[in-house]
Image (tube, rainbow, N blue to C red; front, side, top):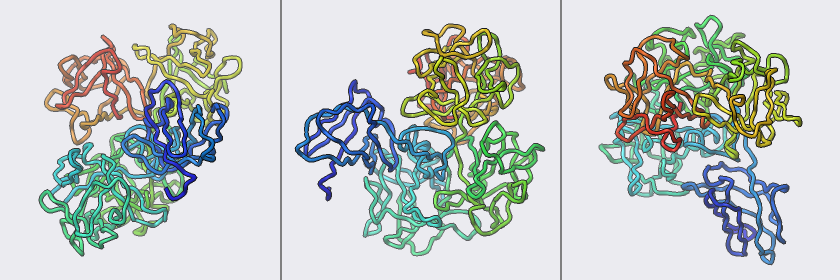
Length: 609
């Protein structure tokens, strides 16, 4: 590198038993047990924790700067002391968390390292980047093949090879300059001869594109290569960049690869959307996205011109006039526009959705885009209720700061948001009053802290019966006392340490794996569908219609009697599904079939929900 004070540092496997940094004037080599290379971090700083590092004659100066990540290896730049300071150093590296979550980088509670962890959608959301698929005029997806870095426009549905990361080229608020990165971490580029490639590890001048929206009312995007001035198009299975003006071959439908169910946040009002009390409108005035009425699905309607519909949790659609209707009509279809990382939704008349008036009713009015017309789609974090096995009461904070199992019904006081910390793979548990469960000095659990700390982290250990045990930061398990109070003083999880878990903000479940969505084929269910199927979740023997019946051969959806399943939360956006009888997990297979596998978590598929 140009500056001799900086050297490259490659972070190795997280399974190592020790943290080891060998330092010389020429090379840094690091091996970490803290999971650094299991995540992909955005640009930011990494600090070395003074309390944990053990020095042996060398001063390493913080901060380190992340300047890129490829294929799971994190390449860092560290300022070092003089070359004479070359003995070995043992230390722990901790990550300075950057609060970013959502399309525009807003934090909605998910914690992690200085950037990203989890799957590609989670990684991109934490950076404020979009994850998309691009569909040409023949309704085929832009595809990056795994062999030879070949690209074509032959994909028939949005799966891993059709996923593209849309990286902003600058931080200007009104800029539509972007880079496109494939699932292989290669950048789409155009060379000096007009050839379209996807082999570059780093951004280059030919990688930059400018987005414009077609004026034909279709909402399609045109991508102009900034270096050459021509538009990206496709002919047969070949990509081209030779058109001076965009024709049909140079216009692309945009398929947002968002979570099946998300929260919608207004950039201008800094508030979240939710169902109105009358259940016939959407109001954008919630400070916190709490409960099922803040869940929305942005449906991509491929058969209706690649437009989008906003589907609510009460199974209705938002119309341009602001009312919720039973069926999706032309008034419910919107085009998606990119505005410097934020989302704008435009109706057929050219007007944009925005919160209007004192009630912040979501409807279309203006034909210009300001901050009021911009939104971010954010992961809906899991919100749950817990029933203590000891007394069959809901855990609550209704009585004050003490966390106590003493309530018979669920209200906001008995509903808690679970926020995952990627660095420790433990959870923060947050109340609606923005307080965190915290381990106190005497072992008691109180919801009094307004900020996170190590004593607010809990490990969730699933007990195989739909129950979960909480392990506090002192290594002890939470147990329910006869008074209902929770204390962290049990060495092993007995029956008094068990709490039954109910996922509150998913009355409708949409399951997705790498192959696609869960959906029916006849009376059987498969997990490779391009479009999602909603699954009604009921507790106990309630509900209507047919039920799932799972065995080692597959899953059918024609049973008259319910079969019990336990939902085990494993990551912020992924869960395992376990049969109540037998304890086997549901697992996906490459042919689209999925069936009960075995009782070991290693055999389970973690389903995006």
